[in-house]
Every structure is written in C-alpha cells, then in structure tokens.
Length: 100
Image (tube, rainbow, N blue to C red):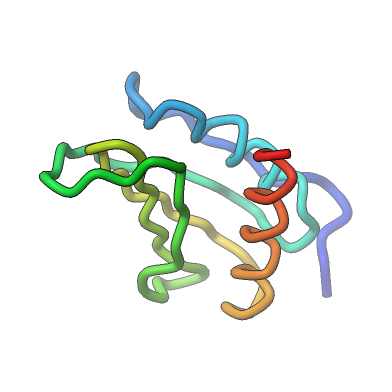
C-alpha cells in the first residue's frame, strides 16, 4: 500500500555532493518513499564526471545508496516500501530527467 503524502528529505550534514539535493528532493516526492537521509561524504581517488546514484545494500526498512560525482562519494539512506528494482527504475528516471 503506497503513501499519498510525499517523503521527507533530512538535512543532517552541512555538505553534500554538488547536484545531489535536487535529485533527492525529486525522489522524496515518489509514492512509497518515506525518508531520505544523506550520510557521510568522502573523497576518493577515482573520478566520475556525472552524478551517479546506485543502490548498494538493503537496510532495515529500505536501502543504502551510494552517490558519486567528481572525486566525492556520499552514502544516502532511503526508507521505502518500494522493491529494489522499482527504486532503481525511479532513480534512473529522475537522473535522466535532471540531465535533459
């Protein structure tokens, strides 16, 4: 059973990967997503030109995602009723619409 109200985007860190918050805001409006919480941000060696958001592992009540752009990586926690495949489809659609 889906929710009729939109999910919440929690701001618990002062820094985020550039361009990530607008993507997470769009995801929070999808029926079935309850809460989105960006987590720790880290620098890495590998460079990724465009923002990527990938489902990493299931967590209790949802999924952990990994956001990557440039040399930054950030965890994102999503509490949702959606199945992993449906969440991945929704993420792909939001990313695609944000790039056009």
